[in-house]
Amino acid sequence: MSASITAGSVTAADAAACSSRSFEVQLLAGRVEACAEQVDAVRARLSQLQLMDWQSPAGQAYRSSLRVQAMALSGAREGVLGAALALRRHSVHVAESALTAAGGY
Image 1 (tube, rainbow, N blue to C red):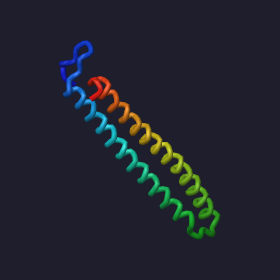
Image 2 (image 1 turned 90 degrees about the vertical axis):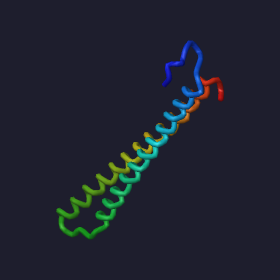
Image 3 (image 1 turned 135 degrees about the horizontal axis):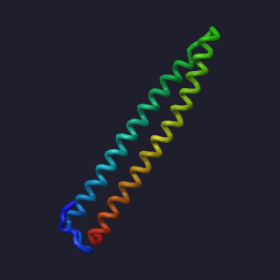
Image 4 (image 1 turned 30 degrees about the horizontal axis):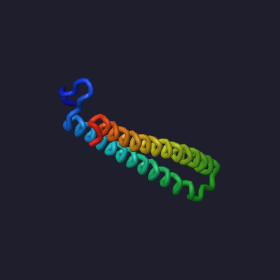
């Protein structure tokens, strides 16, 4: 941020810097959403393994373990998506603060 901010004065460059930060937060949200997609892909692969015909007691125990892990990944995915949503909301607030600080333009 430039050093031109004095009691209540904000330059267009300051507003542009805040706007740029808002865009950077949006990019971060996109990367977090991509992580959620990767978690979902892993969960889907675990679910496919669960569908295999496990006859032995050890195989059945393994399938049960896969089920637990897939459920945990579903919860993790929801948490990651929640974080992405929070980042998207934050980016809006960063942009709004830039407009407010710059006098509404």
